[in-house]
Image 1 (tube, rainbow, N blue to C red):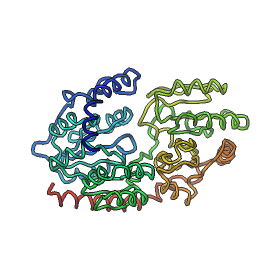
Image 2 (spheres, helix red, strand yellow):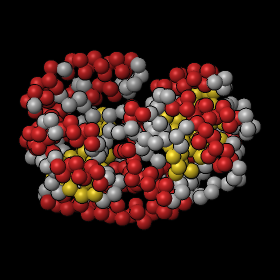
Image 3 (cartoon, rainbow, N blue to C red):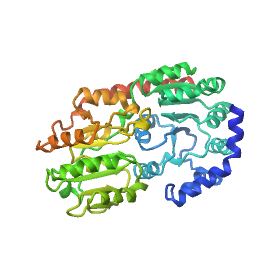
Image 4 (cartoon, rainbow, N blue to C red):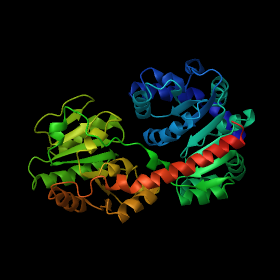
Length: 428
C-alpha cells in the first residue's frame, strides 16, 4: 500500500497541478504563491539565522496556525532555533502574512503536494532538524522520507475520528509503519489517544487541546465601525457552511419582526461563498453588504457579510450572541463543529447545533459554565437570541477568559515539557 501510494502520488501529480491552477482561477489559491505547492523552483528557501536548527510546524489552517504560535514563542526563548510554518489554505496564508510580517526567524510557506519527488526536494532544501505535524495532517511521503533522512517526527494536538480509525484498520501494515514513525504524540482529546494507541503510536499523551492557547486580543481598538458595532442590536454567525446561512437568516427574519433595526453579521468559513450568501439574503428580502477589509458598514443594513480573514475579533468584542457553524449539517455529524474558544474568550454566549464532534470536550466545558447552548431548530435560536437582547449587557463578560487562564497555563506547561523532552531525546 505504501509503495502504491508513492507511485500514485507521482502519477497523479500532473492532475493535481491542474487542480491547483483551476483553484487559482476560482480565486481559492493565492494569486502568486500557489506555485509553492507544485513547483520546487518556487520553494523560496530563506534561512536567516546562520548555524541555527530549523523546526518545521505543519498546520492546515487558521485554527491550527493560531494554536502553535504560543509554543513557538516558548521555543524562541532558547535562542538557537529558526522556524518554518506551512499551511494549506488561502485564509491561513493571509493571516500568517499579518501576524508574522515582523518575524525574521519564522517563515511561512504553503505545504507542497505530497508527491514523492516534490517532498524529497522540499525536505532536502529546508533541511529541518525536527518536524511537528498538527491535528490530523498525516502525509505518508513526508513521513517516510523524513524517517529515511533521520528527521525526528512529532504530531501535536493529534485528532482522529472513529471513521478515520476504521479506515486505517483496512491497511494494518501501512498504519503500523506510518504511526510508529512518531517519537511523540500529543492528542487533542481522549478518544484520539485511544484510537492512536491502537494504531501503534508510542509516547502518547493527552495534555489538553492546544487550541486553548490561541491568543485573543480583548482590547477595543479604534475602529471606524465602532459606532455601528456599539449598538446593542447585532448578533453574529461565524464559520458557517452551506445551508447554515438559511438557518440563521430564518431566525433573523423572525427576530426582526420583534426587534427593530436588528443586524446580523455573517462570517462564512469560506469567503469565496460571499456572493452566494448575498443571493440567499435577497431570497429572504433582507438587505446585505459584502464587507471588505478596511471598509465601513453602511447604515440600515440587515445583513453584513464578512469578506476577509483574521479580523473577526474587532466585531466579536462588541457582541454578546454568536452562532457557530458546521454544527447543524447532519452529514457532518462525525466531523462537525468549529472552534468556539475565540468568541467565548471575548465574553460571547455561544449557540451551536447538535453536531460538534471535533470540539465536544471544549463544548462540554462551555456548557458546564453556561457559556454555550445547543439549538436544534430555528425556533430555539430565536428564543435564545431574544432573551439575550432583553439583557442590557453581556451576562458574563470575560468569564471564559478568566476561567481558562489556569487551564491555558497548565496545558502550555505540560506541552512544553513533552516537546522539550522530545527535542532533548533527539539531540536537537
